[in-house]
Length: 305
Ligand SMILES: Cc1ncc(C[n+]2csc(CCOP(=O)(O)OP(=O)(O)O)c2C)c(N)n1
Image (cartoon, rainbow, N blue to C red; front, side, top):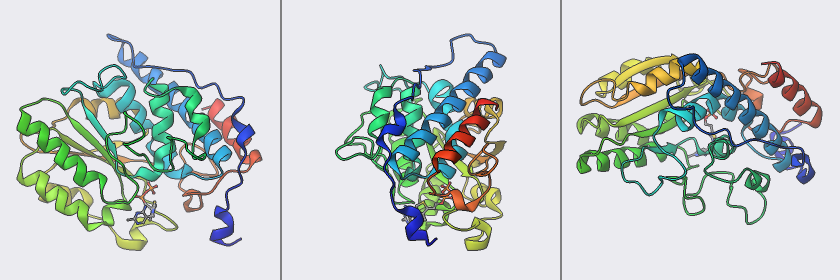
C-alpha cells in the first residue's frame, strides 16, 4: 500500500454512536495525591478511547502523536492550569497552546472531558462545517488560544503570550506543547532565544519527546541531542519527566517557574501510540487510521490498562 492509499479517508459517521465520554472535570480541591493521579489516569484512559473512535469515524487523524500527548493535556486541563470553562475571560487565567496542532483530536477530547466544549460536538470532528477542524482554529473555539498546524508557529506565539503576561505583571502562566520533530523548525530556536533573553519565567515549554516524527525517527532525520543542553544554553531551566507518569507531570507543572527569571522546559519522555501494544513507538502510526478490528483491539487494551 502506498502512503497516499493509506491516507484515503474512509468515513464511518456511524462509528461514534456508542460514544459516551463523560464530562470528567477537574481533580477535586483538596484531593489526595493518590486520588489526583487516579482521576487523571482514568480521564486519560477515557480520552484515548474517545480519540480512537473519532479518528476512525473521521477517517483521518494523528493517533500516534495524540496518544503520546494525552497524559500531558489531561494533567494540564484537569489539574495544573487554573483555566476553567467559566473563566476564559479572566485575564489572570493560564494560557495553553498546542503547537503540534496535528494532535487536535486529543485536544478536543480533553476539552470535552474538562467541560470546555460539549461532548456531543466531538462527533462532528472533521465533518463539513465543523468547528473541530483537523488542526485547532481559535476563530472557531473560544477555548483555543492560537490556531496551529503549520509546525514551528505555536511556540513563537506562546513566547509573545507569556511576554505579555510578564509586561502586565501577571502571575498567569503560558504552557505550550511542541513535538520533538517540530523542534527541527528554526523559528522555535529564535523564539526560545527571545524567551531566554527576556527572562520570561511564566513560560513553560513542554516537549512531547516521543522520538518519532512523520515517517521516521527524529534522530535519523535531524538529531536534536544534546537537547537539554541546548535549552540550558538558551537560558531555560530544564526538567525531564516520564510524560506518561501523571504524578511526575503534576510535580513538574506545579514547579513552574522552576527557576527565578528563567522559562521552564519540561522534556516529557513519551511513546507515540502509548499504551497500545501495536501502536507504541511504531512510526507507522503517525497518521494511520485504525481498522474496525484494530479499534476493538485497542479499546480492549485500554479497558485493561
Ligand atoms: C511546517 C510544517 N511542515 C510539515 C508539516 C507536516 N507534518 C505534520 S506532523 C509532522 C511531524 C511532526 O513530528 P513531531 O513534531 O515529532 O510530532 P509527533 O511525532 O509528536 O506527532 C509533519 C512533518 C506541518 N504540519 N507543518
